[in-house]
Length: 245
Image (cartoon, rainbow, N blue to C red; front, side, top):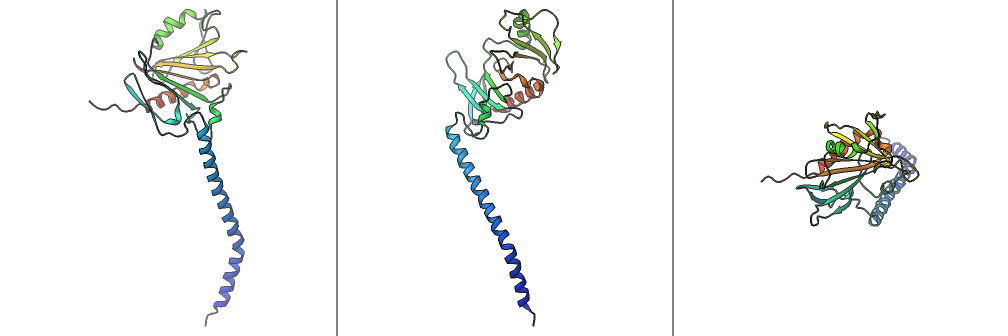
């Protein structure tokens, strides 16, 4: 007959050796599971107290210049409904560099307005009295520029300054061409006692009925081309397909 007793004793010995490890792993798993549910519960509780939506649904549907934009809820900063003689407007917020949406875990970054803030705010509206970049450069900015030729900035944009005493005296103008070969104009405040965290903005007409403006901290200007491309592609992705007539 086979000696099964020895095998059983050896099997029992292995079980006694492994048993403490099993309980350790089981305890770690339960701790991790509990921590996950506590974090989820904390996030949901916090989300109810935060000023902006933290979930992509429901979306905000806004019609601007005949185009329908569908914006996930966690990107919406503010919406202005259409009024008499004025179309709808929407403000969208995200974090640079990847345009991350608002959430219960990164909400503090959306309230950071310091010089190194990653906050990006995008505005979509009707053009109003705003003209295209070429015309704005020649008709609006040119008359206020300082004398002398511009110099090339470290991020390959022409750097202009404005004359003292003018409306734009505390700002710089950076000029170049974007990936679509359109004139890109960036207005940037200069750092000073009243402006410790200077920002920059670009305004561009997407067509004759929709105007895009976005604002960010000046510290991000070195990556203007990447930033500009991401913003315009993102806005394009929000545009809903129009039903065929």
